[in-house]
Image (cartoon, rainbow, N blue to C red; front, side):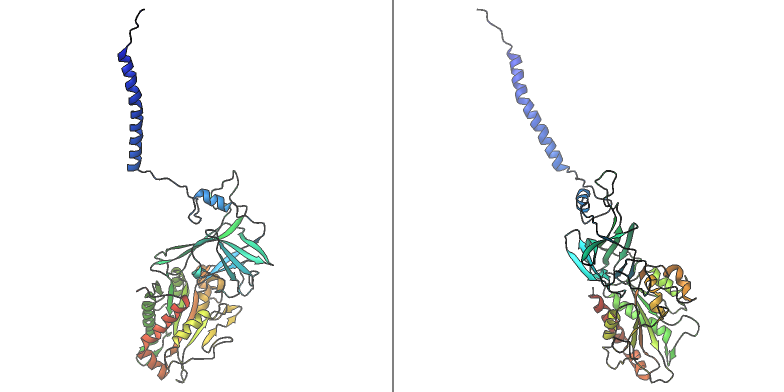
Amino acid sequence: MKKVKRDYRSRKTKLRWKIALPLLVLALLLSYVLFTLMSPHEVIVKQPKYLVCDYSLQKAQTTLKTLVYEDTTILAQHLYYGETLNIYHDPFELAKTDYFVGKTLILRNVCDGTELVYMMENYVDRQIPLDTITEGFYEVFVMENLTKTRLISNNVLYDEFYTIRREIGLGMEVEVVADADLIESPFEERKIFDKNYVFIRVVKKEVPEAIYDVVIDPSRNQYEGDGLVVKNVNGANALVDSAKLLKTKLEAYGLKVFISRGNEMINRWGTDGRMARIYGVKAKYYIALDFNSSANGISKGARIIYSHYASNRFATTVFDAYMELDDLTIFGVGSKGNKLGIVSGGVLDNMDVNTDVRETGGLILNAGRYSDASKENASFAASNPYGLQAILLDLLFLSNTQDYQIYTTRHDELIENIALGFADYLQLKKVN
């Protein structure tokens, strides 16, 4: 029988490849794993064009596409007074009671499902308190005849607002937004929403340096002869000193404070005037300081004035703290529903007659419309949606011997009490 010759070299080669090939694959896999571990790549999560909670685009789409409603009601306009957001079903008209007044407003946080409930009042500082709303992305509902209706806008809205600094440098950035195309839609040739649903987005954020929290306005020095000199005290300059001291005390709470004037002469009117400066710093609160004076020397005491269209809470809290000073008395009888010395401003043609209070209120108080002089402020005030919540504090009668003694010997205590009242109203704590 013929023997077959075998090629042992070929067989050995095949055996080597059977062993080497798996080892090579294993080595490549190990190299890839090591490379991946040593050079981790970042997984990119696509974000929506408008940030909703902390959601990715896919989660935002999944959540928002379900938030469509049949029962809706129109937001025609929204305005601010201090840190209060006011909403209107019809275009705003001073002294007219809007359809939303008396109704219940509900904010539902899309991020966690919690709800905030408010009763809509007629006072311009008693609607939506932005200073107390926590971070979130809120749907807005209005209860109408026991039906929960979703707030919508006929127009696209993107409006930004900052509350005051309640931590070092930090406040809340508040955005009122309404856009059917708010984020990229998962539907072909169709927006994410069928209407411009109104949302309120609240995020803790550093307040831009150009924005202030409080304005202090030392009265007087608006024109030649607008001064008050008693003994060795120049009233106009003394009010600046009081404003500077109050600024220092308020800054201890982390607030950014603007004083409307120094010792220069500057009136209220026009683009170079005091009110233009005040609107320019975008503050939320306004405190005007003034002295009273009387030829008889008998009149004495302090009083505070606030807008006819605001509640008395801000003025009352500040005035109560101010009056804690021993020997300081109250001037006047106040006004209906108030304690002595606390005055809801009078009105003429539905407008506040007190210039300081009215002219800092923007559109919501009809600033820039009262008189020919006030119309010089119309370009920056009449249509301004951001009104400052204002009080005028008449410190005392500089012409009265007892009041003069209090001011010249107990000045620091007087001003400290104003700061304490302001901080109490806003629930502020000192930061240093």
